[in-house]
Length: 169
Image (cartoon, rainbow, N blue to C red; front, side, top):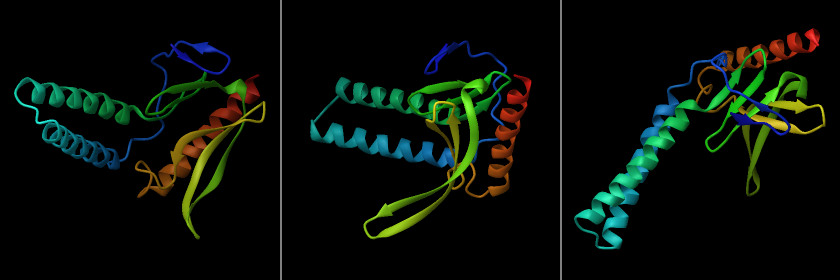
């Protein structure tokens, strides 16, 4: 079961991610493997570990990597007739269509000192209470960086599903 702010829904088999994950996810997983291998090496060297200590550190960090890689592969936005499921790295969130007032794009910029870096669009869900929820769908992210038409199609699919659900109420 996954908890939303006000409801609990049983996650069924009818949740569909309306896009194929980008190949950039594998680069992130490989990067994390290298980073954890370096952390393992540094830990062994720092604490002069031998034998069982080396195996414990290696197994612990390998387990962290496996769990993290699995979550990275599951990241994304899933839709169904019930609503939207947003799977993040650490938590998941379900929002029913009737809780969503609108779906919109927001232009994102990041500041780095005196410079502003254009980061593209992200999809936001507007709740009926005025709160906005980030969907983690980012135009320049690992899933859509080289596929802007896929990003637009996913955005339109979520908007269409929301409109359909709103007209049925």
